[in-house]
Image 1 (cartoon, rainbow, N blue to C red):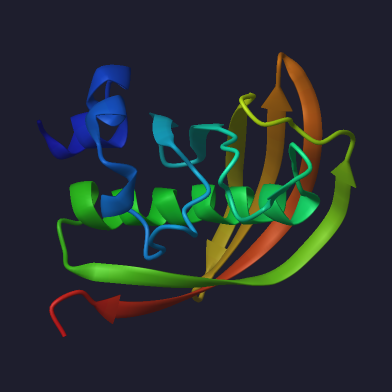
Image 2: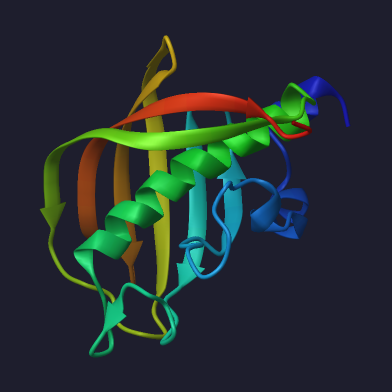
Length: 157
């Protein structure tokens, strides 16, 4: 695939990617299941809420889990850019710098599929500002603005 193709990859290509290749997090702290859409501004992931998830309590996925799911969708975007577009060995370690206007309208249950959409509005000096929504069963269950600070490390160090 050309660099242009990698900037707008097919759904089939994205769904074949092992999400662990894009994230610095490892199990049991992986909160996204698969990448379903990528372009330079929008990233979409899907996740099925597992009973064994560390943010699941009494059959519900917590607000903290939703926030981490959003942050990891941002991380998957950066991982994709580094691996498939820039083709370098950089691992992005992201830190939530700020959360604004967080609204959690409902919590998903174990077994629910959640879809998280992150739209990047700005990237400057290692900071990413994104608007995010989480949907479940066709309804928005959470939305927020998130600022992520990024520190890069070489994967071969």
